[in-house]
Image (cartoon, rainbow, N blue to C red; front, top):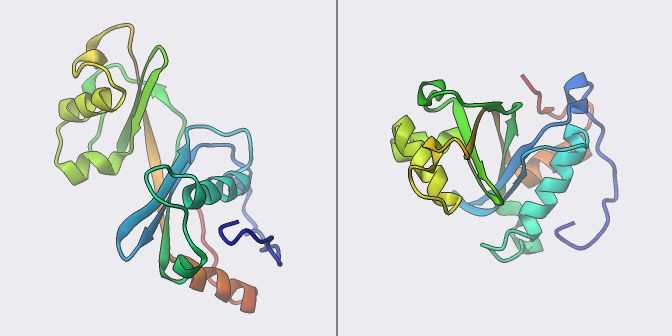
Length: 184
């Protein structure tokens, strides 16, 4: 995908029914600690494994904020995956638990999402988190208070998978002994 070539070997799937989930997720690729590409889907009609493959490829090649990842960079990439729960309507800012809850704001065609760690990284309160999401959606800071604005909350499951190529290479060399990522 990044190299333009086809996969030469299909990786065996971890035996776990959760791979059949149909849910949104984000993939962030890092190079030496700096984001090199990040993409996500809020929901998916594909299995988790299919969504992960698709979103990972998109993060590597189609994040407009960064140039596509080159083959020479693959050895230095690490991967972080964020799996999203179902969304539910926020009734009050007290529904938000900083560090555990992400938010999505929608009004007409304007939509934005912020993952839970964004509030922690910025040391935001619940209201600051909501205002930042409104700003990202190009709405007024207080748009979250408007009954015409949909504010949804969700939780995430974070997976820091580590160095991308060594994980894949180890699996291809010794599939029976390679460390398999698990979903808790």
